[in-house]
Image (cartoon, rainbow, N blue to C red; front, side, top):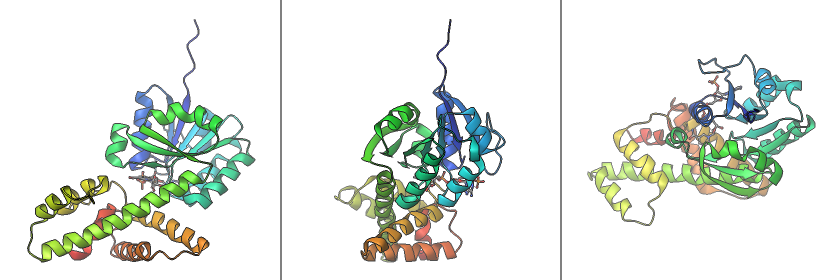
Length: 281
Ligand code: NAP
């Protein structure tokens, strides 16, 4: 009797999201190996990214930024071969995504542009939403892995397009939360209870998932990190870089980046990005 071989998945980067994705993949029955720059006590924690590549066919990356992805690829080195699919779920922007895809292709491996939306809670529940850029065959091969940690998978286009869409949607999130902070500050300074603002928004067309998620936290002064301010600023900066290339002026995004940089300067970079409200506290 032959048992069907389990698909082997390497999760690299065990931060807020990667650690939760690895747990879901294990629960779904994949053969999971993991690595993190700072060692962690997790099942099948291997000694290096190269060890993970030797153990696994699919490598899903959840490290912070383009520099981290390049360092991981440096560390994998010649252990990356034609049997691999690199699934880049780090938010790195379209330009870095294309560079990373090129590096991966030079080793004969396949690449999927697969950033996601959904934060700590969604990762806990295996309900992320992936945006996908890449060819159909690579997508089909990686799909069972992505399905195990998501509630939806949205096909965006070619490599780089999903990364672009991820940046654009985060720009909307960043500007919304900055404006929300400003509105909360005026509400409080005017002597109106923030709960009244929450009710007013509940019945307004502006209500959104992100406001539902962040407003209660802001009202409670709870900045426990679901998505760090430093990462949101990284993504907003990708948007500004893109606008620069396209010769587009983005006043709202620029103002938001300015406020976020000030927040970073105040030492709030590791907090949730809702911490932009702290300037009014
Ligand atoms: P996180 O908790 O800050 O974790 C970042 C991970 O990157 C850690 O494992 C960290 O390792 C690793 N890392 C950083 N620099 C590295 C380097 N030079 N070499 C190797 N590893 C490095 O971040 P996260 O919230 O899980 O987010 C991960 C990615 O998903 C980011 O690109 C983020 O923008 C994106 N994302 C996050 C969310 C969210 O809600 N959290 C939502 C959508 C997209 P150490 O433990 O050693 O520091």
